[in-house]
Length: 121
Image 1 (tube, rainbow, N blue to C red):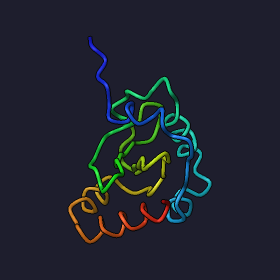
Image 2: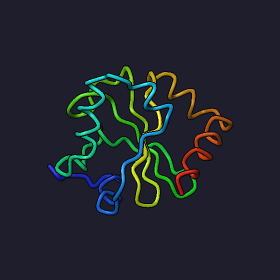
Image 3: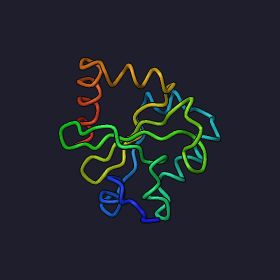
Image 4: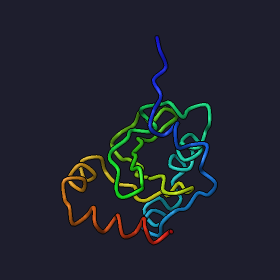
């Protein structure tokens, strides 16, 4: 079985900083499963995991991803939404999967997210 190269694996080597937005910190406060999943997201041995690094879309120069919780991102009731922009990995939101699907379909919400991402330039 061939290993598929994910979008994330192309970006991983350039990441020099990890940032957590205020909404993300508030949503994930004291959640041990989130902390474990964050470590998995940054684990260089798992950069080709499609469950940990589910590519959503590109907003400006930011590549938007989501991950379910757990070692391989398998628990998808709630998802961690993050992006790679410039040399930063930015944790953006921790939301229910269905909320995230609605969020992606709303251009106004995406503009808000884009503005937030660009504020880290």
